[in-house]
Length: 420
Image (cartoon, rainbow, N blue to C red; front, side, top):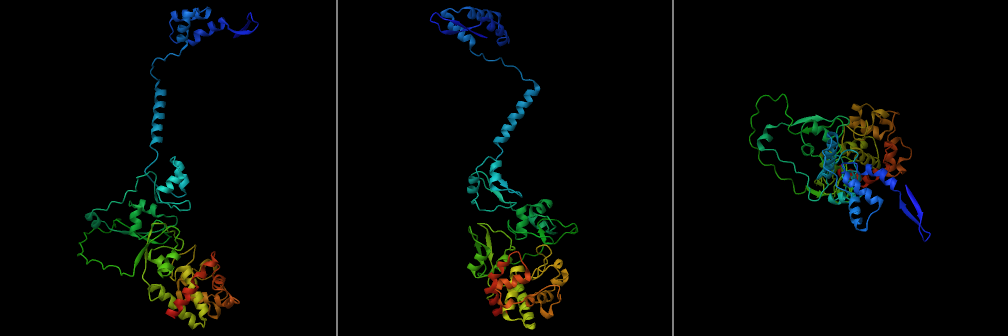
């Protein structure tokens, strides 16, 4: 409590209420303060001589508290906090393996880093795509640990098995299930980090011992060194902004041949620094042996049905866009075969669609259509001759990407000229 009193000059002066100070003094200094000090404080409050001002100031200064042992609970809490602080300081690893749903900004925020620094450390840009299993560097000087080569003896003793991909599988999950590294799985199957696997695909699992192999296996005689690849086969290191189609055009080969040589799909993602194999040209068409065989069959059946060259070229371009002119046993949803026809939309059973001759006739349609009126082939489209290449193909296929057929118009006529 504070009282005011009048000075001789008429001003208000602040005067402490000594009773209030006395009432609170025991509470402030109750922790082990000697009675003599309390007496000194009383003297200070009742009237302090000029020479005692320094002593009074000293008494009011905070004193260091005596050291006391913390209770067990408080000590444990303090230790936990200390450990948490230590964990926070050591929370940023040198590298980080990307998981499904991760983004660069989220990873950076998780470890208290700037997104721009993580991008710079990994040679990425704001438009770069990261993928599950990719290893990112989070601190300067850190490098992903290279896979250690297995000893020669163990490599000979280990056997490789196969695994059939199931819906929902990922390369990393399959590798973990069989106790091998993701990098080893990719290498064994000639896949890249951006490759796509599909249900029913058979993968080689390195080092997976077969249960049936109980008898000792005799060492095979040493084989002669493999002949070097022809000089016409070469590699290409992907640069930022490049696409498969641009790379294929630069080297004068087809997109399908580049995809096949690198075991990629049309939806696969390539990334800067990735090394791609550029296949040699085959019979000046850019098609390999299997593709040429299927292309010749498309041309032969078209000739037998009386389809004009433009219709045959449309069939060839459609087959390249849909399956790389391969008789695939997989595809989007239930799509199959050369033209990725679907049993669920009336193109036939899975076995019928995989019958190349039948599926080609179904694409051409007309009087020889094995599906009758259940589906509509190229010859059944009114005015197809006056449509653009892409429009005619789309009229049959009803694709989600109708403009993609156009890029195969020029190559299709080249294949027709070379193989027909």
